[in-house]
Length: 173
Image (cartoon, rainbow, N blue to C red; front, side, top):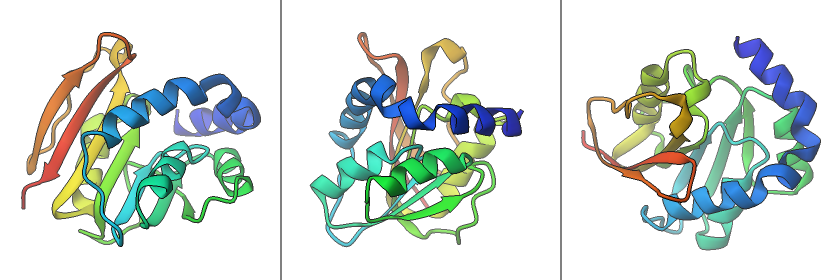
């Protein structure tokens, strides 16, 4: 399944922003308006796609940006944009980062694609520092309960107008 998803995103990477930029920017804005970022933060976007969240963060804070995605095509699109970020080909359910490396970690409309959504959220928690910010969204139509990992203090938000469920909060320990 993971290989098929990556192949699908590779095939549509060149038109992704044209199709989804506006919708994704609304979701990103929803999360960024609820999560505090500071200059100097390390921000990781788990499932960064074409780098839309990384672009938005770079407009708000002078942060070290890292994006991870399983689609090389999506990462190429992010790189083509000239976003100043480290881009990593990898899996959000098994990220190649040290524990507690991020001041803030995000994942926008990705969790529903994971084979194990709880594992993906647990990984997001693992890579985030104690007290670090977490912002996650996933599609409502996926029909999954908010998969909160132990050790994350979070609020769950459902928007009337947006297609996602949003989880914002911080790593407790």
